[in-house]
Length: 166
Image 1 (cartoon, helix red, strand yellow):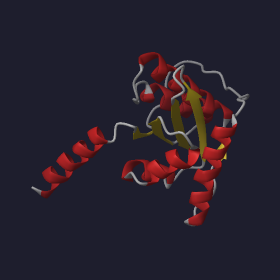
Image 2: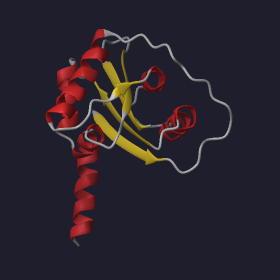
Image 3: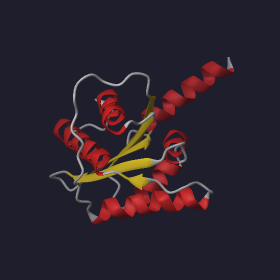
Image 4: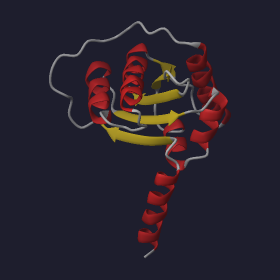
């Protein structure tokens, strides 16, 4: 009964907090095909500050800082553009993104946080840290990450943060 109640509570929280969500996947088999490594990503100030805040938090609890990877950030930006085009916060295509990161970078584990309409990096990171699933990704057994913050035509920001253990 407790498990059912916990599951129902989790589902209720998930629907109530539609402004951000988290997802993870562990590698089992590399995706087929040949993928290209992207080595050039230009970070904006919001992205740099968000990554700094995540690493600052990790170090404050005794974890190692994560290393940023342009390829992962490019995948984050692609997902932001997808969410903007579809006017929806989601993890659609996460399996494909994680498979790509596993194949191209040799990642053993991949996790993802997304968020929408936070005006500042501090607000986005604070919201992620107040959510158990997001916090688990930020505190997770990862070594690298990528992040993109993309603003839509209405001035709303979409955040995608992908974590990888390489």
